[in-house]
Amino acid sequence: MARRPAPHSGFTLVEMMVTTFLIALLAATVVLTLPASRALPREVDRFATRLDHARDEAIIGMRAVRVVVDQAGYRFERQHLGQWEPLVEGPFDPVPWADGTRPELVSDEPLSFIFDLQGGAGGAGSLALSDGARRLRVAVDPDGEVHVE
Image (tube, rainbow, N blue to C red; front, side, top):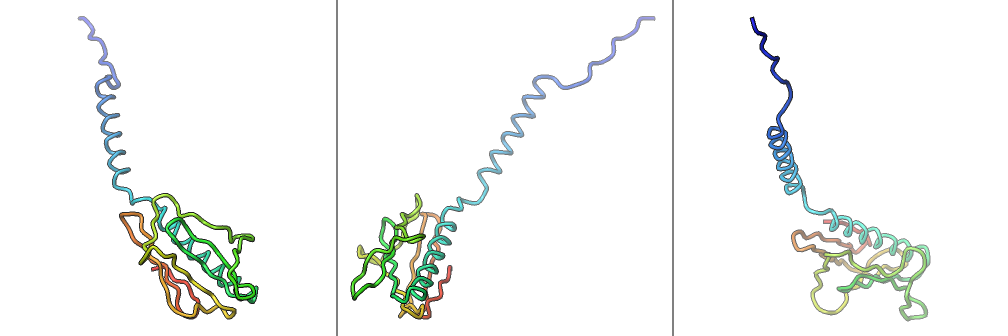
């Protein structure tokens, strides 16, 4: 009686290619359904933290501090002898907006947040930042507290 050869075990090249294609297709689906970039929330948190630093600087330095916001970014100034002078020491260098982040300003004029010697803001104010798909707001209440909405 003749013996039959044992069947080969394993996968064929076609089976391996189909499996690889399906895995790549599933990976692409997962990547496309991930949430959008975290750049805007990071930028909003950075701006809110810098506003808190400006408030602290006004209290510690015993001088009013102003944060001036425009389309390009924001900068810090402090009051000295009745005039506003740039504040560029330590964490107060001018900051450009991250790529894709746009402030929603009411006019072409810059927006200012002013913190007094007690840390108050002298009035409520807010700034909305957008990346085209999402919009987040940073608000400063009259007591100088900074909130992200």
